[in-house]
Image (cartoon, rainbow, N blue to C red; front, side, top):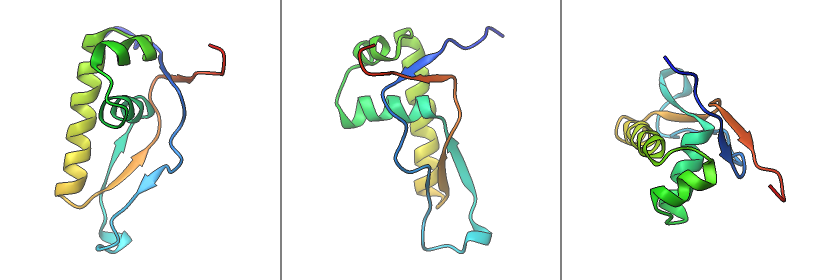
Length: 100
């Protein structure tokens, strides 16, 4: 397996965990959304950028963005449909500093 190329992200999420309030914590399962998945979702679904522009911002190939978005959306759908917490952490990322 090839090593993952570093994905560049603008910012880390303000919150690291989102959990439903309708289930007790002891019975709550969760999914882990990586920081690069979070950033790809932010750029695509919130900012409305196409995959080519996201790829340039994150400094990876467009096909990589396609895979990241597919995986992230599946995790988010699983969390919403199956009442799971979403924890945001990890991934092969570097934070973009101002001026980069």
